[in-house]
Length: 106
Image (cartoon, rainbow, N blue to C red):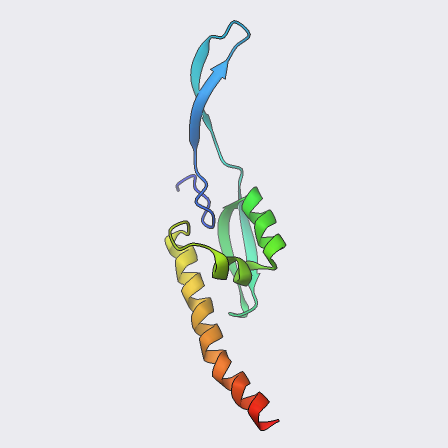
C-alpha cells in the first residue's frame, strides 16, 4: 500500500534531521493518512478512501466528496478516485435531462 493520498496525491517527502551542532541525517516526512468513509450524494453510497487529514478538511470545505472530485485535476487522483469521479459525472449527466423535463412540464 503506497503512502500517498488518493485525492490530492500528497506523498512521502525526504529531508534532513538537523541537530544543534548542524549534523545532518536523512529522514522521511510521511503524510498524515487516514482511512475514511465519505458519502457520495450523487451515487447514493459511501466510499472508503485513504486520504490525508488536510484533504479531509478540503473535502469538507468544498461541500462534500462530489464537489471536491468535480473540481479536482485528474492527474492528482488515484485510479480508484478517478473511477469514482467518472461515476459521479455520469450520474450527474444522466440526471440533468430528467430535471430539465420536470421543470419544462411544470
